Image 1 (cartoon, rainbow, N blue to C red):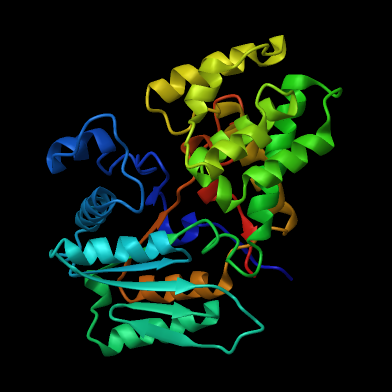
Image 2 (image 1 turned 45 degrees about the vertical axis):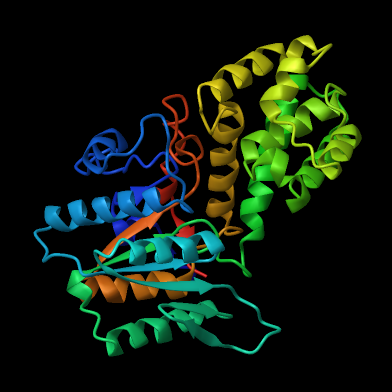
Length: 349
């Protein structure tokens, strides 16, 4: 029988999405932390930024105080990407705590290895996270004074190398859903899929900024021939870097079905909103929840069991995601049928 669990079973509402507004209202929000930490207004730090590490440490300390725990001495980061490695490095660079990192992936065709580089270990099996934790204990880590920050996307949920493809599939389905809602059934769905797949490639990151809102919008406008992707590709190859905002402002002959979206995107990008395509993100929550419900998208049993063990030893557990809140927390209209992502049950795999 499949065992189901939620992220909240480990962390409660100590969950932080892209906007850095903790789901637990008892924790300080980003507006408060901007003042406390002296961060600039109207800029939301991303995981690769030093400011993100400062926010995470402040939130961990606040959570530890809420449970009347001893002062934190260590933060342990569990993730799957270079951004998680950078976060560990930045936490260490603050000089206020000791930081350790675990960067994992399942590579069944490769030997099972756990390789250390200073305070960060890289593993070719998620199961090696137990060995990593044992090494931390051997190095003198006191779990009662440790915050364990677990990345959600492609780490705890849809672990990379195992069920991470379901996360990408959910985004692709959400993109097609929104395109159909906006354009009806008459547009070229095959062309839209091809455009979307092409724009997901790393070569387009200078334009998309590796932001799915931008990627889906570009694919949509290219499908109805408002944008000319081959011409834009020539510009990129020549070292030019047009922005989505510039392309939208210069756009001609926009179909009436997309005129409101064009206006929305321009206004939100100009305002500095990193999540301007709200409709797409709301659809992403629907398609992600469906995959969690039917077992295509699972929680990592290794990380979940380790989290339970470390919690029993006194560790503070938090989870973080680069997902926008719009694709993780249901809108009022969605609340009747959907739970927050971290409270949605999924199979332990």
